Image 1 (spheres, one colour):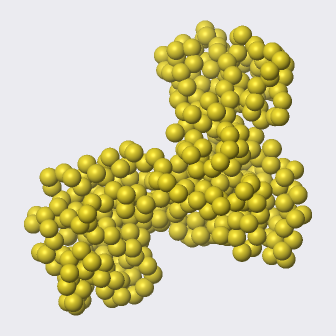
Image 2 (cartoon, helix red, strand yellow):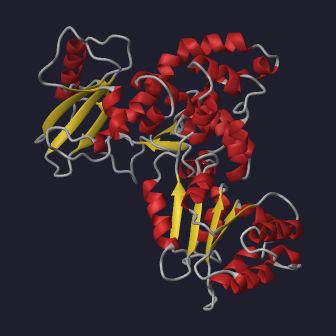
Image 3 (cartoon, rainbow, N blue to C red):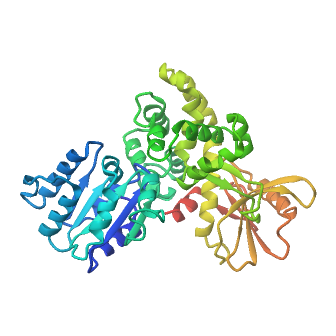
Length: 456
């Protein structure tokens, strides 16, 4: 599969590698998001790439020496009793400005707890002649090694790059089909490039779901366990929280009640899942984020949302190879699932759209009591940067949508929205496909093609 995007990350790494002084770069992020491809894409001829695995320290040192030997012949002939001796010898024999890339660095630290301090000593050495790049999929461990104020490597990196899943628009380049098909694929595979690559040989989304996810031998059937293993201390607790959120428990009180635990004990594990990008915290537009008590928690990763809805509750059936009954439920609920992801993409597209000449802040849902005293919800609300206008949107994922009816409903909601006073209101509707019978002159329409075009 082609290498997509990452232009900013490539530019930052290339600038650091081509600077006049030996740098220290850190790359981290979720597994399968393309960190190794990014590094290999950015490396120059003569740079050294070494991928660690889970072995004893002595064997890891020998393996790294072997990788160096491919660039510096004869390097592996010597015996290196420690990482310090390897670093010092490499510094003596390497060409000025060469780079050593240590991928899956946390595996090396697991075998040698002193390694971060040895790296600190090496990068602080005024006679250092080479760049050092460390990379890891354990976001928790990489954070502890580099970003914590008490970490040995804190404050020493020239570049720290967190590699996120790709934005949804890039999936148009990875699959065959139109923008509607792209959003349907994204609603299950998310923005992880490796998932797109695994899905590429299959003819349809249904086959992808069966072969990769539902089948007990599918490559992605047990993927959440692998993801969580990298980053959480107790997989059972994190998996339980994700399962409950995916299946309708959106308040901490509900989650605590289902787990039989006090809410106070959930604050830290939920915060960790938010930091990792697996959960998001939603609050109504206009609420003070620090004092609001209206917080809802949602799964923020499409693949995990799908997996915890359809694989986790049906493990017994799937282990017995009873895929078809599970697939029947998937197909019945798929439009609802895609609709939920489409709403999130609509919110994310708002700051990228220039509607009526305004630049928009981040969009949020709103729920509460309207001016008519009735409870109401808005799919998204965003304020313009100059504070003079509000964009208020309705999001639909239907085969056919009566635009006139949707517009009337949206205008009724706007009339009862308590935060519109003194603002220009711009109504916008996000549709799966437009209503060809009638166009509404006073409402803007955003289609999947429009949204994906800006989400890149």
